[in-house]
Length: 114
Length: 116
Image (cartoon, rainbow over all chains, first blue to last red; front, side):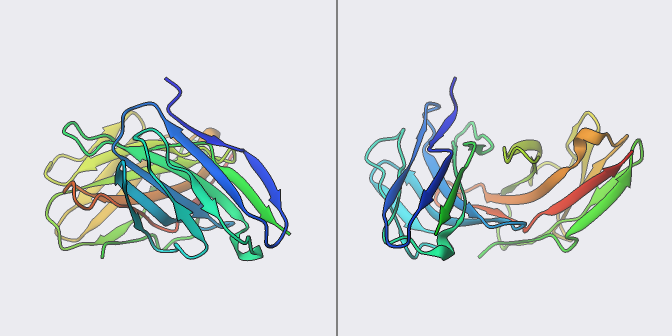
């Protein structure tokens, strides 16, 4: 199984540009999450989804948008990139069962906005 | 809202010794899950151990064990016989067991260094 796949692994954006971070999982998990991790800090929840067609805001949603048209995919859209969005982004998924599982993470995307 | 607190930003342990990482959480729920994740320099998030709140027995996984105190809302991780490969950032995390609210909430993490 591939698990959770994130692309790209690295990206440099100019201020004001837009981009989409892709996330896909092949475990048929219902829950998916997007987090950001600033240097030396913990993970902050940006958005999450409880299933296809349903999304909700986390702690730090401003400047981001998401969609969940399928169970497998949960892309994160950055509009008008700002230096404050420089961070490492993680996608994760889990199943809320039963049986329940822990969250599985992608390998992260390091984004730099200059 | 649930919160997870890791008050120690850094800890250090001698190789082969034992270290305990602290975590407290706040919730009004009775059924939930707790996790410890390890993040090495590769950035990959790796599950170390998990605990179901309804289980009184503390979880163990080889050299890793937890001290789960439900009434005190405390969930510490003990690493025995520390190895150089244990050096990493460790995160404590909480997730509700009710399907309607399964946000996964993390603490700020603790950086563990292992001295040879």
